Length: 452
Image 1 (cartoon, rainbow, N blue to C red):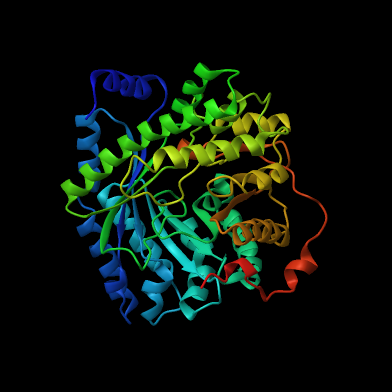
Image 2: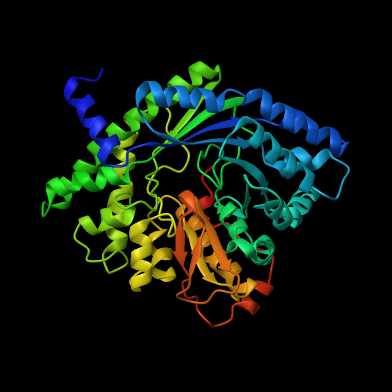
Protein backbone atom coordinates (compact mmCIF):
# COMPACT_ATOMS: atom_id res chain seq x y z
CA UNK A 1 0.00 0.00 0.00
CA UNK A 2 1.39 3.40 -0.97
CA UNK A 3 1.60 6.06 1.72
CA UNK A 4 1.25 9.80 1.09
CA UNK A 5 5.00 10.37 0.86
CA UNK A 6 5.41 7.64 -1.76
CA UNK A 7 2.49 8.98 -3.78
CA UNK A 8 4.03 12.48 -3.84
CA UNK A 9 7.42 10.98 -4.71
CA UNK A 10 5.96 9.00 -7.62
CA UNK A 11 4.11 12.05 -8.95
CA UNK A 12 7.37 14.00 -8.91
CA UNK A 13 9.07 11.20 -10.84
CA UNK A 14 6.35 11.38 -13.49
CA UNK A 15 6.15 15.18 -13.71
CA UNK A 16 9.85 16.06 -13.52
CA UNK A 17 12.00 12.96 -14.08
CA UNK A 18 10.54 11.34 -17.23
CA UNK A 19 9.15 8.30 -15.42
CA UNK A 20 6.77 6.33 -17.63
CA UNK A 21 5.64 2.90 -18.70
CA UNK A 22 7.53 2.53 -21.96
CA UNK A 23 5.24 -0.14 -23.38
CA UNK A 24 2.33 -2.45 -22.78
CA UNK A 25 2.91 -5.27 -25.24
CA UNK A 26 0.30 -7.92 -25.96
CA UNK A 27 1.75 -11.24 -27.05
CA UNK A 28 -0.54 -13.25 -29.34
CA UNK A 29 -0.07 -16.83 -30.51
CA UNK A 30 -0.72 -17.25 -34.24
CA UNK A 31 0.02 -20.98 -34.35
CA UNK A 32 -3.60 -21.71 -35.23
CA UNK A 33 -3.42 -19.35 -38.22
CA UNK A 34 -1.26 -21.62 -40.37
CA UNK A 35 -2.88 -22.64 -43.63
CA UNK A 36 -1.67 -24.12 -46.94
CA UNK A 37 -3.54 -21.31 -48.70
CA UNK A 38 -1.48 -18.13 -48.13
CA UNK A 39 -4.50 -15.86 -48.62
CA UNK A 40 -6.41 -17.80 -45.98
CA UNK A 41 -3.43 -17.66 -43.62
CA UNK A 42 -3.11 -13.89 -44.07
CA UNK A 43 -6.82 -13.48 -43.38
CA UNK A 44 -6.59 -15.59 -40.22
CA UNK A 45 -3.57 -13.58 -39.05
CA UNK A 46 -5.45 -10.30 -39.48
CA UNK A 47 -8.59 -11.60 -37.78
CA UNK A 48 -6.73 -13.15 -34.83
CA UNK A 49 -4.74 -10.00 -34.12
CA UNK A 50 -7.66 -7.61 -34.45
CA UNK A 51 -9.97 -9.76 -32.32
CA UNK A 52 -7.45 -10.27 -29.54
CA UNK A 53 -6.05 -6.72 -29.45
CA UNK A 54 -9.19 -4.74 -30.25
CA UNK A 55 -9.31 -3.18 -26.75
CA UNK A 56 -5.56 -2.94 -26.07
CA UNK A 57 -5.17 0.76 -26.88
CA UNK A 58 -8.47 1.69 -25.23
CA UNK A 59 -7.54 -0.07 -21.99
CA UNK A 60 -4.04 1.40 -22.06
CA UNK A 61 -5.45 4.90 -22.46
CA UNK A 62 -7.97 4.32 -19.67
CA UNK A 63 -5.26 3.15 -17.26
CA UNK A 64 -3.02 6.05 -18.22
CA UNK A 65 -5.83 8.52 -17.53
CA UNK A 66 -7.03 6.92 -14.29
CA UNK A 67 -3.61 6.35 -12.70
CA UNK A 68 -1.88 9.42 -14.14
CA UNK A 69 1.03 7.31 -15.35
CA UNK A 70 2.18 7.89 -18.95
CA UNK A 71 2.12 4.78 -21.15
CA UNK A 72 4.25 5.72 -24.13
CA UNK A 73 3.55 2.79 -26.45
CA UNK A 74 0.99 0.05 -26.95
CA UNK A 75 2.43 -2.80 -28.99
CA UNK A 76 1.78 -6.33 -30.21
CA UNK A 77 4.16 -9.28 -30.52
CA UNK A 78 3.20 -12.42 -32.44
CA UNK A 79 4.54 -15.92 -33.01
CA UNK A 80 7.62 -15.84 -35.29
CA UNK A 81 6.12 -15.53 -38.75
CA UNK A 82 8.52 -18.04 -40.28
CA UNK A 83 6.79 -20.69 -38.16
CA UNK A 84 3.23 -19.49 -38.85
CA UNK A 85 3.76 -19.11 -42.59
CA UNK A 86 5.74 -22.33 -42.98
CA UNK A 87 2.65 -24.34 -43.94
CA UNK A 88 1.62 -21.93 -46.71
CA UNK A 89 2.31 -22.94 -50.29
CA UNK A 90 3.95 -19.73 -51.43
CA UNK A 91 7.40 -18.29 -52.05
CA UNK A 92 6.33 -14.74 -51.14
CA UNK A 93 5.96 -13.94 -47.44
CA UNK A 94 5.48 -10.18 -47.83
CA UNK A 95 1.64 -10.52 -47.77
CA UNK A 96 1.95 -11.84 -44.22
CA UNK A 97 3.83 -8.70 -43.20
CA UNK A 98 1.16 -6.61 -44.89
CA UNK A 99 -1.54 -8.46 -42.94
CA UNK A 100 0.34 -7.74 -39.71
CA UNK A 101 0.65 -4.07 -40.65
CA UNK A 102 -3.05 -3.72 -41.51
CA UNK A 103 -4.04 -5.39 -38.25
CA UNK A 104 -1.73 -3.15 -36.20
CA UNK A 105 -3.19 -0.06 -37.81
CA UNK A 106 -6.74 -1.32 -37.33
CA UNK A 107 -6.30 -1.66 -33.55
CA UNK A 108 -4.20 1.51 -33.27
CA UNK A 109 -0.95 0.19 -31.79
CA UNK A 110 2.44 1.80 -32.33
CA UNK A 111 4.39 -1.27 -33.51
CA UNK A 112 3.93 -4.98 -34.13
CA UNK A 113 6.82 -7.40 -33.79
CA UNK A 114 7.28 -11.00 -34.79
CA UNK A 115 8.21 -10.93 -38.47
CA UNK A 116 10.93 -13.20 -37.24
CA UNK A 117 12.95 -16.36 -37.78
CA UNK A 118 14.91 -18.51 -35.33
CA UNK A 119 17.88 -20.02 -37.16
CA UNK A 120 20.46 -20.70 -34.47
CA UNK A 121 21.13 -24.23 -35.78
CA UNK A 122 20.00 -23.96 -39.38
CA UNK A 123 17.26 -22.92 -41.77
CA UNK A 124 13.85 -24.34 -42.52
CA UNK A 125 12.22 -23.54 -45.85
CA UNK A 126 10.03 -20.99 -44.06
CA UNK A 127 13.06 -19.34 -42.46
CA UNK A 128 14.73 -18.87 -45.83
CA UNK A 129 11.61 -17.39 -47.40
CA UNK A 130 11.07 -14.99 -44.52
CA UNK A 131 14.66 -13.75 -44.37
CA UNK A 132 14.69 -13.23 -48.13
CA UNK A 133 11.55 -11.11 -47.83
CA UNK A 134 12.70 -8.85 -44.96
CA UNK A 135 13.92 -5.87 -47.03
CA UNK A 136 10.71 -5.64 -49.05
CA UNK A 137 8.52 -6.38 -46.03
CA UNK A 138 10.05 -3.57 -43.96
CA UNK A 139 10.00 -1.14 -46.88
CA UNK A 140 6.35 -1.94 -47.60
CA UNK A 141 5.02 -1.61 -44.05
CA UNK A 142 4.99 1.11 -41.41
CA UNK A 143 4.59 -0.69 -38.09
CA UNK A 144 6.09 -4.16 -38.66
CA UNK A 145 9.33 -5.05 -36.85
CA UNK A 146 11.58 -7.98 -37.71
CA UNK A 147 14.17 -10.06 -35.89
CA UNK A 148 16.38 -13.04 -36.65
CA UNK A 149 18.07 -15.15 -33.97
CA UNK A 150 21.40 -16.39 -35.38
CA UNK A 151 22.77 -18.31 -32.43
CA UNK A 152 22.59 -19.42 -28.82
CA UNK A 153 24.91 -20.59 -26.11
CA UNK A 154 23.55 -24.14 -26.56
CA UNK A 155 23.76 -24.15 -30.36
CA UNK A 156 26.71 -21.93 -31.22
CA UNK A 157 26.63 -19.32 -33.98
CA UNK A 158 25.12 -19.96 -37.40
CA UNK A 159 27.72 -18.11 -39.45
CA UNK A 160 25.80 -18.69 -42.69
CA UNK A 161 22.94 -16.71 -41.13
CA UNK A 162 25.38 -14.06 -39.88
CA UNK A 163 26.76 -13.60 -43.40
CA UNK A 164 23.29 -13.46 -44.89
CA UNK A 165 22.02 -10.89 -42.39
CA UNK A 166 24.85 -8.52 -43.30
CA UNK A 167 23.53 -8.53 -46.86
CA UNK A 168 19.90 -8.27 -45.71
CA UNK A 169 20.69 -5.21 -43.60
CA UNK A 170 22.44 -3.52 -46.53
CA UNK A 171 19.49 -4.28 -48.82
CA UNK A 172 16.98 -3.06 -46.23
CA UNK A 173 18.85 0.22 -45.92
CA UNK A 174 18.85 0.63 -49.68
CA UNK A 175 15.10 -0.11 -49.90
CA UNK A 176 14.43 2.67 -47.37
CA UNK A 177 17.16 5.10 -48.42
CA UNK A 178 14.67 7.94 -48.78
CA UNK A 179 14.17 7.72 -45.00
CA UNK A 180 17.83 7.40 -43.94
CA UNK A 181 17.60 3.60 -43.93
CA UNK A 182 14.66 3.56 -41.51
CA UNK A 183 13.91 -0.09 -42.29
CA UNK A 184 17.07 -1.10 -40.42
CA UNK A 185 15.74 0.56 -37.26
CA UNK A 186 12.98 -2.07 -37.36
CA UNK A 187 15.36 -5.02 -37.77
CA UNK A 188 17.32 -6.77 -35.00
CA UNK A 189 19.80 -9.65 -35.22
CA UNK A 190 19.79 -11.60 -31.95
CA UNK A 191 21.92 -14.04 -30.04
CA UNK A 192 20.08 -15.95 -27.28
CA UNK A 193 16.78 -14.23 -28.10
CA UNK A 194 14.16 -14.36 -25.33
CA UNK A 195 10.50 -15.24 -25.91
CA UNK A 196 8.87 -12.58 -23.73
CA UNK A 197 10.63 -9.34 -24.68
CA UNK A 198 8.12 -6.43 -24.78
CA UNK A 199 10.52 -4.00 -26.48
CA UNK A 200 10.81 -3.35 -30.20
CA UNK A 201 12.19 -4.06 -32.64
CA UNK A 202 12.97 -7.49 -31.22
CA UNK A 203 9.69 -8.54 -29.64
CA UNK A 204 8.10 -11.82 -30.66
CA UNK A 205 5.70 -14.21 -28.91
CA UNK A 206 7.58 -17.41 -28.15
CA UNK A 207 6.14 -20.86 -28.74
CA UNK A 208 6.40 -21.59 -25.01
CA UNK A 209 4.14 -18.68 -24.13
CA UNK A 210 0.43 -18.75 -23.34
CA UNK A 211 -2.23 -18.06 -25.97
CA UNK A 212 -2.29 -14.36 -25.14
CA UNK A 213 -0.29 -12.43 -22.53
CA UNK A 214 0.47 -8.90 -21.38
CA UNK A 215 4.13 -7.94 -20.93
CA UNK A 216 5.12 -4.51 -19.64
CA UNK A 217 8.37 -2.63 -20.16
CA UNK A 218 9.20 0.07 -17.62
CA UNK A 219 11.56 2.99 -18.03
CA UNK A 220 13.10 5.56 -15.71
CA UNK A 221 16.69 6.59 -16.57
CA UNK A 222 15.77 10.14 -15.58
CA UNK A 223 14.62 8.99 -12.15
CA UNK A 224 17.85 7.10 -11.49
CA UNK A 225 19.93 10.06 -12.70
CA UNK A 226 18.03 12.45 -10.44
CA UNK A 227 18.34 10.14 -7.42
CA UNK A 228 22.10 9.76 -7.84
CA UNK A 229 22.54 13.50 -7.45
CA UNK A 230 21.71 13.02 -3.78
CA UNK A 231 24.70 10.69 -3.23
CA UNK A 232 27.36 12.67 -5.08
CA UNK A 233 30.90 11.59 -4.10
CA UNK A 234 29.57 8.73 -1.95
CA UNK A 235 31.18 5.25 -2.23
CA UNK A 236 29.92 2.83 -4.88
CA UNK A 237 28.22 0.74 -2.19
CA UNK A 238 25.91 3.69 -1.58
CA UNK A 239 25.44 4.24 -5.31
CA UNK A 240 24.38 0.62 -5.80
CA UNK A 241 21.93 0.70 -2.89
CA UNK A 242 20.43 3.96 -4.17
CA UNK A 243 19.87 2.50 -7.64
CA UNK A 244 18.37 -0.68 -6.15
CA UNK A 245 15.90 1.36 -4.08
CA UNK A 246 14.92 3.43 -7.10
CA UNK A 247 14.56 0.39 -9.37
CA UNK A 248 12.23 -1.19 -6.83
CA UNK A 249 9.91 1.83 -6.93
CA UNK A 250 9.94 1.99 -10.72
CA UNK A 251 9.25 -1.74 -11.10
CA UNK A 252 6.46 -1.72 -8.53
CA UNK A 253 4.67 0.80 -10.73
CA UNK A 254 5.20 -1.48 -13.72
CA UNK A 255 3.81 -4.44 -11.79
CA UNK A 256 0.71 -2.41 -10.91
CA UNK A 257 0.07 -1.44 -14.53
CA UNK A 258 0.74 -4.96 -15.84
CA UNK A 259 -1.74 -6.54 -13.45
CA UNK A 260 -4.36 -3.91 -14.14
CA UNK A 261 -4.02 -4.28 -17.92
CA UNK A 262 -4.14 -8.08 -17.83
CA UNK A 263 -7.25 -8.09 -15.62
CA UNK A 264 -9.12 -5.57 -17.76
CA UNK A 265 -8.21 -7.35 -20.99
CA UNK A 266 -8.89 -10.80 -19.57
CA UNK A 267 -5.51 -12.22 -20.57
CA UNK A 268 -2.56 -13.65 -18.65
CA UNK A 269 -0.01 -11.39 -16.97
CA UNK A 270 3.32 -12.33 -18.50
CA UNK A 271 6.32 -10.37 -17.19
CA UNK A 272 7.66 -6.97 -16.24
CA UNK A 273 10.86 -6.09 -18.08
CA UNK A 274 13.08 -4.01 -15.79
CA UNK A 275 15.14 -2.43 -18.56
CA UNK A 276 16.00 1.25 -18.30
CA UNK A 277 14.94 2.45 -21.75
CA UNK A 278 16.19 5.95 -22.62
CA UNK A 279 14.68 8.50 -25.00
CA UNK A 280 16.20 11.38 -26.99
CA UNK A 281 14.74 13.81 -24.41
CA UNK A 282 17.20 15.69 -22.21
CA UNK A 283 17.07 14.20 -18.72
CA UNK A 284 16.13 10.68 -19.82
CA UNK A 285 19.55 9.24 -20.61
CA UNK A 286 21.46 6.16 -19.47
CA UNK A 287 24.70 7.86 -20.51
CA UNK A 288 24.02 10.72 -18.09
CA UNK A 289 23.59 8.20 -15.25
CA UNK A 290 27.07 6.87 -15.95
CA UNK A 291 28.45 10.40 -16.04
CA UNK A 292 26.72 11.18 -12.74
CA UNK A 293 28.86 8.42 -11.22
CA UNK A 294 31.92 10.53 -11.98
CA UNK A 295 32.82 10.07 -15.65
CA UNK A 296 33.56 13.24 -17.56
CA UNK A 297 32.01 11.72 -20.67
CA UNK A 298 30.32 8.41 -21.42
CA UNK A 299 32.79 6.23 -23.32
CA UNK A 300 35.88 7.18 -21.36
CA UNK A 301 37.77 4.67 -19.21
CA UNK A 302 35.52 3.43 -16.41
CA UNK A 303 32.34 3.44 -18.49
CA UNK A 304 32.03 -0.35 -18.63
CA UNK A 305 32.47 -0.66 -14.87
CA UNK A 306 29.84 2.01 -14.24
CA UNK A 307 27.40 0.30 -16.60
CA UNK A 308 28.01 -3.07 -14.92
CA UNK A 309 27.09 -1.57 -11.55
CA UNK A 310 23.98 0.07 -12.98
CA UNK A 311 22.76 -3.05 -14.76
CA UNK A 312 23.23 -5.29 -11.74
CA UNK A 313 21.65 -2.85 -9.27
CA UNK A 314 18.61 -2.36 -11.51
CA UNK A 315 18.03 -6.12 -11.59
CA UNK A 316 18.56 -6.59 -7.85
CA UNK A 317 16.16 -3.79 -6.97
CA UNK A 318 13.53 -4.56 -9.56
CA UNK A 319 13.25 -8.30 -9.09
CA UNK A 320 11.82 -7.85 -5.58
CA UNK A 321 9.01 -5.61 -6.85
CA UNK A 322 7.43 -7.98 -9.36
CA UNK A 323 6.13 -11.53 -9.16
CA UNK A 324 7.27 -12.24 -12.73
CA UNK A 325 10.37 -10.56 -14.14
CA UNK A 326 11.56 -11.38 -17.65
CA UNK A 327 12.29 -9.94 -21.04
CA UNK A 328 15.74 -8.39 -21.20
CA UNK A 329 15.84 -6.51 -17.86
CA UNK A 330 18.81 -4.21 -17.36
CA UNK A 331 19.98 -1.05 -19.10
CA UNK A 332 19.70 -0.30 -22.81
CA UNK A 333 22.40 1.66 -24.64
CA UNK A 334 20.80 2.64 -27.98
CA UNK A 335 22.85 5.46 -29.46
CA UNK A 336 20.13 7.27 -31.41
CA UNK A 337 17.60 6.98 -28.58
CA UNK A 338 19.81 8.41 -25.83
CA UNK A 339 20.69 12.12 -25.74
CA UNK A 340 23.86 11.47 -23.72
CA UNK A 341 25.02 8.69 -26.04
CA UNK A 342 24.49 10.94 -29.06
CA UNK A 343 26.57 13.67 -27.41
CA UNK A 344 29.36 11.24 -26.51
CA UNK A 345 29.42 9.81 -30.04
CA UNK A 346 29.62 13.29 -31.55
CA UNK A 347 32.43 14.12 -29.14
CA UNK A 348 34.35 11.01 -30.23
CA UNK A 349 34.65 9.51 -26.76
CA UNK A 350 32.08 6.83 -27.55
CA UNK A 351 33.12 4.47 -30.33
CA UNK A 352 31.69 1.23 -31.67
CA UNK A 353 34.57 -0.66 -30.03
CA UNK A 354 33.73 0.86 -26.64
CA UNK A 355 30.04 0.15 -27.16
CA UNK A 356 30.94 -3.48 -27.87
CA UNK A 357 32.81 -3.67 -24.57
CA UNK A 358 29.80 -2.16 -22.79
CA UNK A 359 27.51 -4.82 -24.24
CA UNK A 360 29.33 -7.44 -22.16
CA UNK A 361 27.59 -6.03 -19.08
CA UNK A 362 24.42 -4.28 -20.33
CA UNK A 363 20.96 -5.51 -21.18
CA UNK A 364 21.31 -6.23 -24.89
CA UNK A 365 23.86 -5.08 -27.44
CA UNK A 366 24.89 -2.72 -30.21
CA UNK A 367 21.69 -0.78 -30.67
CA UNK A 368 20.59 1.95 -33.09
CA UNK A 369 24.07 2.66 -34.40
CA UNK A 370 24.48 4.46 -37.72
CA UNK A 371 27.47 3.55 -39.89
CA UNK A 372 28.54 4.83 -43.33
CA UNK A 373 26.24 3.80 -46.15
CA UNK A 374 29.06 2.16 -48.08
CA UNK A 375 30.01 -0.15 -45.21
CA UNK A 376 30.51 -3.62 -46.76
CA UNK A 377 27.98 -6.30 -45.90
CA UNK A 378 30.83 -8.47 -44.62
CA UNK A 379 31.83 -5.76 -42.13
CA UNK A 380 28.27 -5.64 -40.83
CA UNK A 381 28.27 -9.43 -40.57
CA UNK A 382 31.56 -9.33 -38.65
CA UNK A 383 30.05 -6.81 -36.20
CA UNK A 384 27.15 -9.23 -35.72
CA UNK A 385 29.58 -12.14 -35.23
CA UNK A 386 31.53 -10.28 -32.56
CA UNK A 387 28.37 -9.40 -30.68
CA UNK A 388 27.01 -12.94 -31.01
CA UNK A 389 30.26 -14.30 -29.56
CA UNK A 390 29.88 -12.07 -26.50
CA UNK A 391 26.36 -13.40 -25.97
CA UNK A 392 27.37 -17.00 -26.55
CA UNK A 393 30.29 -17.06 -24.13
CA UNK A 394 28.56 -14.96 -21.45
CA UNK A 395 25.24 -16.83 -21.76
CA UNK A 396 23.30 -13.61 -22.25
CA UNK A 397 21.11 -12.02 -24.88
CA UNK A 398 22.99 -9.78 -27.26
CA UNK A 399 21.81 -8.08 -30.42
CA UNK A 400 22.78 -5.79 -33.27
CA UNK A 401 20.58 -3.06 -34.71
CA UNK A 402 22.84 -1.18 -37.08
CA UNK A 403 21.88 1.28 -39.82
CA UNK A 404 24.20 1.64 -42.84
CA UNK A 405 22.91 5.10 -43.73
CA UNK A 406 22.60 5.42 -47.53
CA UNK A 407 24.70 8.23 -48.93
CA UNK A 408 26.02 9.23 -45.50
CA UNK A 409 29.59 9.39 -44.27
CA UNK A 410 31.21 9.63 -40.85
CA UNK A 411 30.04 12.73 -39.00
CA UNK A 412 26.75 13.07 -40.88
CA UNK A 413 23.48 12.72 -38.96
CA UNK A 414 20.49 10.52 -39.68
CA UNK A 415 16.98 11.33 -38.47
CA UNK A 416 14.65 8.50 -37.40
CA UNK A 417 12.05 10.60 -35.59
CA UNK A 418 10.04 9.99 -32.42
CA UNK A 419 11.52 7.58 -29.89
CA UNK A 420 13.98 6.36 -32.55
CA UNK A 421 15.70 9.74 -32.43
CA UNK A 422 18.73 10.75 -34.47
CA UNK A 423 22.29 9.48 -34.64
CA UNK A 424 25.71 10.52 -35.89
CA UNK A 425 27.29 8.20 -38.44
CA UNK A 426 30.10 6.41 -36.59
CA UNK A 427 33.30 5.02 -38.15
CA UNK A 428 33.95 1.30 -38.60
CA UNK A 429 37.31 -0.37 -39.07
CA UNK A 430 38.41 -0.13 -42.72
CA UNK A 431 40.21 -3.49 -42.73
CA UNK A 432 38.27 -6.23 -44.51
CA UNK A 433 36.50 -9.14 -42.82
CA UNK A 434 35.47 -10.68 -46.14
CA UNK A 435 37.51 -13.89 -45.94
CA UNK A 436 36.49 -14.49 -42.33
CA UNK A 437 32.78 -14.20 -43.09
CA UNK A 438 33.07 -16.22 -46.33
CA UNK A 439 34.03 -19.36 -44.37
CA UNK A 440 30.39 -19.96 -43.34
CA UNK A 441 29.37 -22.98 -41.29
CA UNK A 442 28.83 -22.84 -37.54
CA UNK A 443 30.98 -21.65 -34.66
CA UNK A 444 30.51 -24.50 -32.15
CA UNK A 445 28.82 -23.98 -28.82
CA UNK A 446 31.29 -23.30 -25.98
CA UNK A 447 32.14 -25.79 -23.28
CA UNK A 448 30.10 -23.85 -20.71
CA UNK A 449 26.96 -24.72 -22.71
CA UNK A 450 27.06 -28.29 -21.37
CA UNK A 451 24.84 -27.92 -18.32
CA UNK A 452 23.06 -31.30 -18.14
